[in-house]
Image 1 (tube, rainbow, N blue to C red):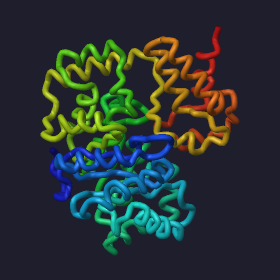
Image 2: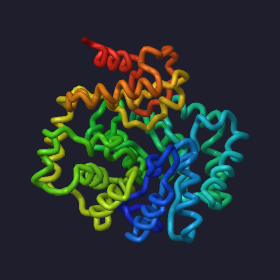
Image 3: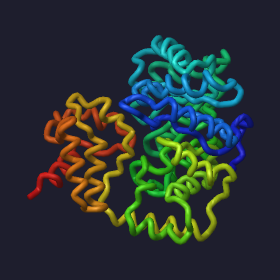
Image 4: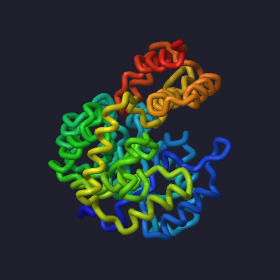
Length: 372
């Protein structure tokens, strides 16, 4: 485990609460409570949420299943300031207090300026959001201030140069995105190391894509034993400067699997590293859309187009080429709208952390599923 200045962090694995067990559109609090208890019982204590996760239901679920049921000193809670929830500096503190109340706590252990990129950074600066976050720390309402980041390494370098008091950086890092020109996992990690900032990893399994691998890739890991998730999460945790890896776990089976190899973490060995290189090569040979299903695009879409679902159907078609991909596509457009309903407004692309050309990709998806 990488050394870092946060002795209160017990282990290098955290519970990402963007994806939780759901039932009939609501968080399954019975299942979530069992997962919370299991997580704590196994020596972990780091929980990560944000106001927009599950349309606010993540925060209130944490209050119901974690903060109202366990002593405050037994867990660390992370929340974030998101750009689409404030327009001026005066909005920030009331929103912060609202988030404290929703989570049922009096302070946050970590407070992150959320989903920073070149454009959002300009807004945060104009609204003095960074300065307000540091004020909240001085008042004892926040223990540590950092940012989560979705852009190229040069932008991250600019932010850390202008705000050296930032204590942590959360970046997207996984073996598939290591050299991706849009995500730049390796380059962003190197910037964090250059500035001496401990790193939190999000999307280590790339929204589930590195769990649901094609058969050719699964065959590479098979002789090693264990789940595909294991190698993705341990890969992220093995990188220099990483002190925390988050995983969004939707059921107890995922929790038990993750805990089994992160409770007594060991870095990847040479054989496992070589296997990941082979799998990376397999993935590069496939025509895939690099969507992590974060749903930031759908929050902005005025046409209710289920963009991540449609991209998932496209990827399934390319990976498996079975009738299920077409069936799921038809089901998705019946519940929402087809790609042809796109108004070409571009709001989806403004919210995409992967910087995908969503409007063009929607045309590609529609052409795939409507071709004769």
